Image (cartoon, rainbow, N blue to C red; front, side, top):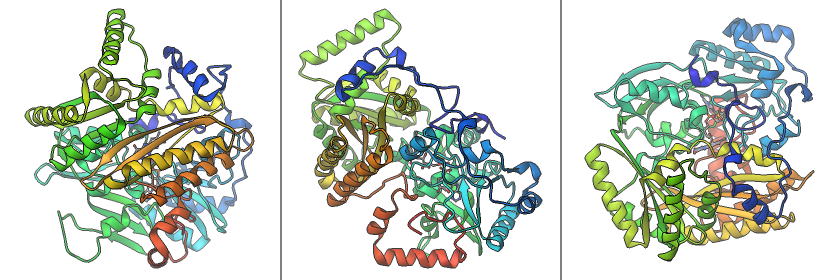
Length: 557
Ligand SMILES: Cc1cc2nc3c(=O)[nH]c(=O)nc-3n(C[C@H](O)[C@H](O)[C@H](O)COP(=O)(O)OP(=O)(O)OC[C@H]3O[C@@H](n4cnc5c(N)ncnc54)[C@H](O)[C@@H]3O)c2cc1C
């Protein structure tokens, strides 16, 4: 097995068990939070929950049924241990974190199975159909919509099918710029393999280090550089799906007119139609240059205008993140001061100078704009990007701000778990809409989240950034923090999701741009798809999975 997968991760929260977020090194963060949320942080580190304290349902698979699984994948590839079941019981949504922390793990799979070949998967699906066992595919387990929770919906038992052993490189074609992988490969290994050929995929969600190809495709994710490279479904050349009724294999061709696009049908299927076993990905030359820069706009709307202008004039940065005032202020408070005194003094002086020029992180909009590619191309685009930013009221903050952001890009999720111990809830939600709807949706959704937090007697920090942009519109990503309503944690969170979802819908947004549906967005999803869309989806499900064993309860199925 590969390196990233050997990292021990937290079952009650995010990430590598040996990593944390050094809040202690950020002296203004806790005072900022205490002030904004009207709370008192008593203890910076709260002890982690223990696996042995959990009450867990006994496995419902009888020994002889486990033996049948072992016959298919080998004894050492079936795990019925407490540890294995807990690790595969939940994803990483706020609801998951709350339940894990409170020791409430209602749907642990009865066994975790690690297939090594497609034949083994086919045999597992056949056995599951015959025995009435629900099957939940599992890649990195970073779903934030309940995608990997084994809801068995009336089945006698459930298994989690962890794809980590199927992580091979099948072929790489530098000539066609394609690479075919098994679906269980994770982000770091996939890029490492491509690098050997001077190639690059360029799909890097914030969960990149601990998520993988099958999960990305199945949940239709978007990486940091999606403005330049597109969402994952745009990177898939062909895909192979094993369903309980057999395989669907699409062709390795750049384009086709053979009816409705099967690749697009499989992308976003969230394990409800079958298991993705392989995919050919469109790859590109490994960038020779990464140039990430910071800019500060006078206000959020200026940043939004600038991005729109960049895209409409064909000057497209791979990465875009325009933070609103709340997020810009947050970024300055969570920042780690440089240990180099001279450097820190210079930063403070620069901040003062920015203030004198009439700019502020409390009212302005911090932008991170990143270009990747050949040296000359990156230099050319960055020059135009800077010029469009200036035209829309921005001042440059230079490369160090961009580099700092790029360097810490996978660290922030660790903070959520620490804050939970302080009685602070943090979660995110995301959408996309057309340019004309961006600002109304932005305002309405922030208001809705604030109202929802106030309904539970909490003050709030509600931030937003614009990222993943297109010619016709953009994604908006909201992060909110509030005081946890003790004893009513999930009810409080559902209330926020409900009010935010209503605001998003009323303002022309989609319920999810890249997190997917799982069961947490199922109700909204059914509304968005419409009755006819849902009927078509149910028909598809029935054709491919007549017994309904595949990831029941997801996608509203
Ligand atoms: C801290 C954090 C940051 C995140 N940042 C981003 C981000 O920037 N962009 C983004 O898009 N998402 C993000 N996410 C959400 C999540 O990481 C993505 O949805 C990711 O694509 C899931 O990949 P995974 O390998 O972890 O899949 P899993 O969580 O294991 O699975 C996701 C879904 O796909 C199904 N599935 C998995 N493998 C297969 C397969 N082989 N065949 C069929 N179905 C399968 C599962 O059953 C489940 O329904 C983030 C999550 C966290 C916790």
